[in-house]
Image 1: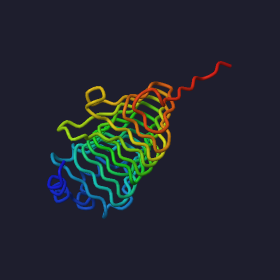
Image 2: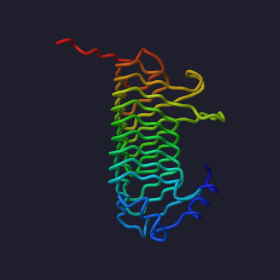
Image 3: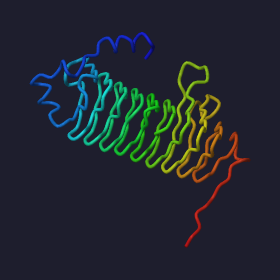
Length: 227
């Protein structure tokens, strides 16, 4: 979505407080809006474009731009923007979420940006990070400053696929290019990415990566010991 399209969405938004009619109350009677005067919502095709589950809480200064589904008992933090996305139940969501699907028990922070992402259950990305065209497994921890770089100059964006139980270090960069698997970077299950690491090639399952990773030469693999 370019700047002009985003501007049009803002212009089309309406304050929640202006929508408080009988139909609105019936649909969202089990949802808490902390400050309706500061929440904007965009219904391109009517009330059916937005679904919010029972027990969820919408904070102040939230923008919801059409085609959105939010599960039960999910908290949308103040200042969050969500566009055409699905959010699971029992989540705590902040930042800017665009064209993404988030499972249950997801946590994102106020300075997180997700674009065309799918996050598995119990994944956290809470501090100053950008994930673009990224899919994660479950129980993944995305550290502060982590970036999945999805653009190398070609028209099609590149993808990053992260396995289960992966942990990234602060300021790590996962760079997907057309030179690697034709634009798909794979991070195996249980991998650990060190602080400030630069990942340019696939990471094997169970590996710990430090520094610049172009191949297996600087890959440290740790195996669990049997009791």
